[in-house]
Length: 158
Image: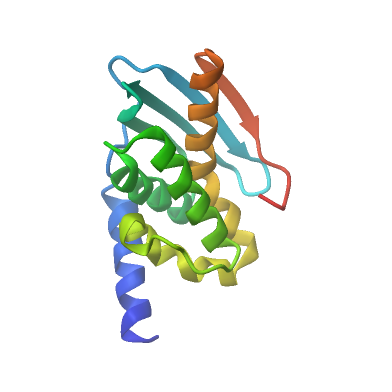
């Protein structure tokens, strides 16, 4: 294993063992979404609070592998405090990265960049994307004026 791979593995394990913004609830939440991947058993509840067009609060909880939980943790750090449009752009950048493209905003992805290598393992891509897909859904749900949504990911193209 190269030194870079070892560092990436260490960052992923740090986010898994000490996840940022992981909690079963969020005070003043606007939206709660539940996303699951029946192929691997990952499940995630994501709650967001949006104030004046800015992602003001985020909390995630659930059961999942180290990749899905660590990715959600890194995501939460990268997106909190950003305008919603910026969050959506960053989410799309991460999605494209998981499908082998070079990210256009690596600095803004922060620790999310360590998941770039996951693209080499197609079965793990959905794990890394689970939190990001839930976040996009939460914003869409908020924009529709709904308070909750439940999604099961079965499509391999996400």
